[in-house]
Image (spheres, rainbow, N blue to C red):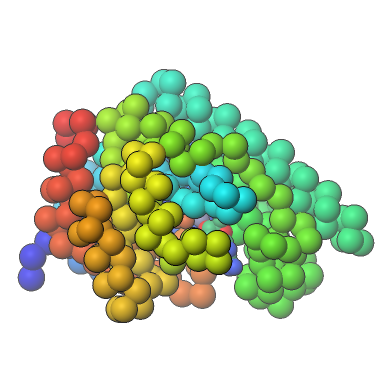
Length: 282
Ligand code: AMP
Ligand code: ZN
Ligand code: FE
Ligand code: FE
């Protein structure tokens, strides 16, 4: 079999339960030749991951997952082969993480208004001391651990999902700003899990067209939540708009129903295409 990669993996520096070390161990076990570390708004896991992966045969592709606001909805944008050590970039990511902290506090405040008694310090303890990017999956886990919900899913449907009572938006980045931020550090910008984009107000193709005009270079065709026909629909869009194709599991460790790492494996040729499209020479 040819070389394969999983191009969408989180660590416990954002909202996975797995450390970089655990992720690499599992990647090896799943026979992955490369993984992209794509934490939300932080690249802090990349240096340790590269160091830990050195003699394992698993290649670490530096990545990130940003959130952009689009028509009152949110889209996620992946960045690949980014210069994760660029100081201006790190500074911007830190600012996004600071906004995340304020937003998490505001979500807790809203939940407490509904009769709960949730403290930010305890949330951070549960999220883990190394967490640099606090998010809703941490809050969902917190609610579950406190016995307020019976499952992570219930936390989202009842309290913190996009249309729920304690949901708070976090970002002011537009898709163009997110894409520019990635490109400014040599990276390739890719629309993540297009399935999550609402098609209520316009067909997906129109959204993709607009995002391409704003600079998006690729689309995540393969993802744990995409079925075969969805993936082929997204692949057609990729072909039509001359977009790079990516795919990944979006593994969050034990944070999702199952451990997803390696559930999506894409041929290494796609990694080569991303590398060629980027300006990072690794
Ligand atoms: P945030 O970046 O803080 O808005 O959180 C986004 C994270 O929440 C992502 O990892 C999503 O996978 C997760 N998420 C969003 N909606 C749901 C849902 N309905 N059920 C489970 N996880 C979700
Ligand atoms: Zn996440
Ligand atoms: Fe995402
Ligand atoms: Fe993700």
